[in-house]
Length: 142
Image (tube, rainbow, N blue to C red; front, side):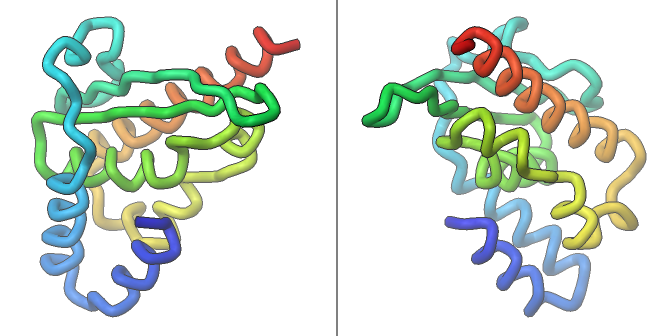
C-alpha cells in the first residue's frame, strides 16, 4: 500500500467512524512484529498507548542505507497510525525520510481535529523517533 492509496481511500470516506475503521484495518495489515522486538529499546516514549518501532538498516545496490521498520501497538487505532507512519517512512533512504513531513500529511487527512491530544503527542513521538534514526544513520555514513 502507498500513501497515495491511503489518501484516495480516505477521500471516499466521509464519516469519521468509517475512517477510524479503515485506520484499524490498516493496523491489522501491518507486518507482524516478533515478540522479541517488543523491548524497552524499541518502545516509543511519549505515547500513552504502548508503541514499539524496530529498525533494520539494509543497503541498496549503491551501498546507500535504507531504513526498514516494523511497528506495533497495543491500541487498535494507534496500530493503524503506526501503519500509516511506516507507509511513509519504512524502506526509505534517510534523506527521503527527512524530506517527508508526515505531520502535514496527517493534518491533510484531518487527524489534527480528530485525534486526542495524547494520540497526537504519540504520533509526533513516532515521527520524531524515525527522523532521529535517519539523522543518526546519515551522520554515521559521513
